[in-house]
Length: 116
Image (cartoon, rainbow, N blue to C red; front, side, top):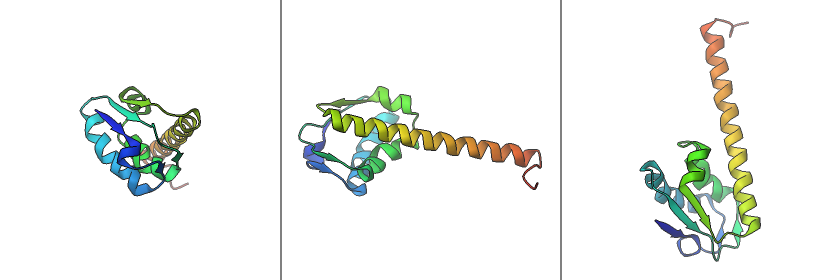
């Protein structure tokens, strides 16, 4: 599958809802183990709200490595590629930290150390 972002969203990918539109197309493909080409030709602007609605939501369901294998970013400017990579790294780090915190809380509760 190939998705032309400029045709689907427009030259400015800025809104959370626009990101969700992309997410709705990507999720079933990634879940099925399919690769998706995202064509960024004609895309001028990427905002974190758009990325949160698309890549951020995908990272809640799939490992970062899975997304990197299944999503092929085509015709993307160096600036936009940097934006996407930095966003994915930040979200992945945050989710890892949240998971670690949750695991530690469970361990403390099992050991009844949570009440100290």
